[in-house]
Figure 1 (tube, rainbow, N blue to C red):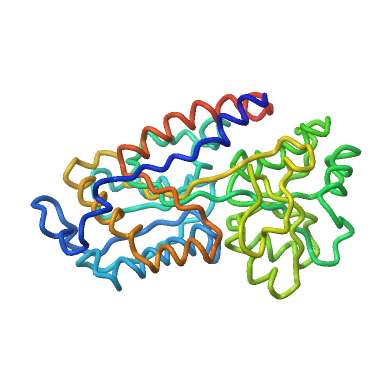
Figure 2: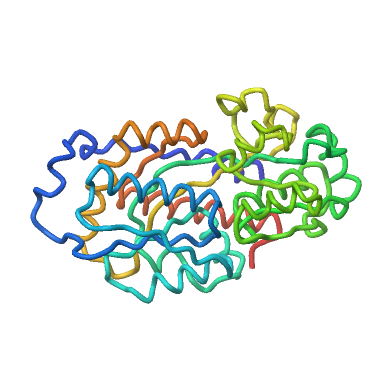
Length: 333
């Protein structure tokens, strides 16, 4: 099992593309397909969630930096373990005007049998960044440390309500299951609550309805700054940077929990090579922008850009590794 976890957690694929060296002005120079109407960026979670914030940052930079010549809008399609958003996306087969912000949870929902839709039904265009999972409680929670949480899990996993978004089997669920399994408890006894977005999960936490929320650091920094929450641990190979540098990893505590997620953009199935090449140029330019790099730094997101071809290779490999992990955790169908 540890070998499978290491295989999954070790997927830090960083490819330096020759396109990164191209000036932004050359984007429109290449002949071929170009969008001629509004671009829709579909988000399968509710407003305020991490994927929503990232999508809106991309939307703003695409227009402000003139990376595209048309307008762009963000469309939220939460619910159904990403199925609602995916169903909307695949209705526009072959149309390069539709993009969807997706995380590695897409793979898990299919492996677990929660969705008949797979990443092979759509077109990977870019992986833009990677995040680790943090375990969060209210500032006044009786769970004062990661050890307290581990001890509760060991005694009775059902005694702790765990919330995350937007679907079972995703990186957040895996992180919690890894901790529970590592302390010798049964992952099937976990008390799990799934929300449409991490912002909703945090609202439930702050309202006293949930004990622990698992999410990425980017959506909780303001709550941390205001003193409303405490972070117990992070499921990462090493400590995060910035204000989270003081937070221990589960590995430091002798618990085998390392779980990350990537954020990327996909198009519908059936996109042609000209459309893919166009978006390759756009996203290669996006990741060069100082404003994009500042966004990643401010939100503790690791820059792991991959173009369309390399995204597909990485996702193929991760899907195989994730199948092993979810099977070992008893979550795969």
